[in-house]
Amino acid sequence: MRTNTASPGRIPRIAPLAAAAVLALPACSPVSGGDAPDPSAAPAPSGGSDPAGADERGSGADAAEDSAQGPLAGTTVVIDPGHNGGNAEASGEIGELVDAGHGRKSCDTVGAETGDGYTEHAFNWDLSERLRDILEDDGAEVVLTREDDTGVGPCITERAEIGNEAGADAAISVHADGGPSSGRGYHIIRPGELDGYTDDIAEPSRRLALDVRNGFEEGTGQQRADYIAEDGLDERTDLGGLNLSDVPKVFLEAGNMSNSADAADLADPEWRETAAESVASGIGTFLRRQQED
Ligand SMILES: [Zn+2]
Image (cartoon, rainbow, N blue to C red; front, side, top):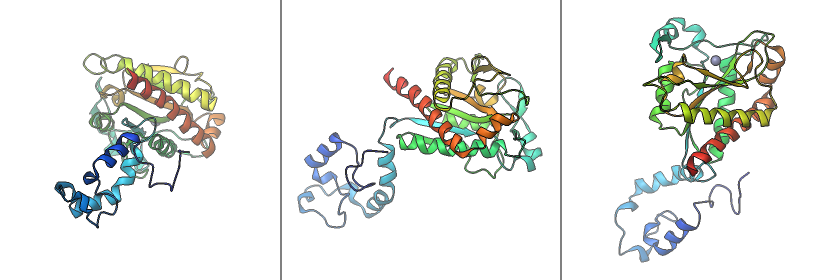
């Protein structure tokens, strides 16, 4: 939890600098008691004190202040929950071929499923929401590439574009694999170098992959995949979501849905919370290091 020295949600504003500024310049703080014009403000009642502006502050200020705090304040993370709940019913739409940066691929796919019928899109969505909440609590601005788990798509091209437009400091696609039922474990996929596409993000994405792997492994104790990748890391040049990204990006394949032991973990809400915390920790490590550079 956060440090709450007083009534939650109100007080914890930005620290000493802003407080000092407010003290020194009372005319610039029409926030508190906005309806009663402070006589000391009379010399410069100017711009900022229009009623509409005051109203906006009233409703939006808390969120803005929250996001301005915490170790990840000032950073933007894009979370891309793979697939979508409506994809299975929209094969035409998601089957459309798009330019994936290295050949053409389907706009989107349906995703995997456990033997018990727990779908990958539902898993991806749940984990992404948990991850978003944690990162936002830490002060990051978070953008999701889809708004619920009942729609169709978006195409992999758009998923990448959302990260680019947000100018994300880090982007992560959340998935679970549909491998051979005998295979266990998680892996992280990073973009291989593709001239004109990923040559600019390959190196930071490699660091992101390592940080997410370390965080995930430390937090969940999940084993590295024994049927794919190497040391829990894979490098691919066939994924549009990576090839078209202009920001550091990786895919998390959190486990193998076809394997009953992995599936039991993936379907467990407590495990997912731990997984979200672990991924957040890895992303946090990456972002803090970026900020220091
Ligand atoms: Zn997937």
